[in-house]
Image (cartoon, rainbow, N blue to C red):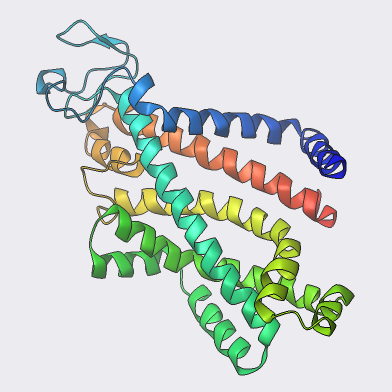
Length: 293
């Protein structure tokens, strides 16, 4: 236990050396807090039809609605409070991005480690599938999948999982190939341990550092992909609004000067993605010091 605490404290001490990464982590944790408690901390429920009035449509920031409530970030074309809509949008965007990342991590890690462990035709087949998939742009594959499946939270998550798993598979295979030739794996074979136990109890823990880095960066990528798909009208339905959908809803009002309807959700999306990427970049430098700039 003391060694574990020492390892965690050493990791945290090294992580906090980069002030930009630390600030990014704090910003991301604040965003997660806002997303989780959006129904509690939001000034109003922007999707409760009994509380939304079309008479409050496109109010500029710091304006009061007909009920005397101040909209700090203004309102959108439907009269919804933009601040509350962004809080709810963060909730959906983060949920889709994190869930798709978890499932993609599980699937990609399984195929990557098993390919490295068993080798032969199985490894060749898995890696050729990975190579073929990675040769296509992610957004194109997601568009094709959603065009076939249709809109929906579950369908968007499935599309993002199918797009992302190959990144985890390639990383897991590359790391597992190095671990497979080490002495502790040979010792496990000599002890007649089962293949499943060797792969997931001995090899997998040593593959996790690079997978954590890839997972961090791919989560940000998944959030941006979902936002792009929703902006194009192929991602989430109106009943499950995300930041991308909020940006798309306000895009038609840009030429009228009502910039806040798209700009504020866009800023929230930008801050979320940049904070995750900065944390992921620092984790990558920590796990592989040769990449430090």
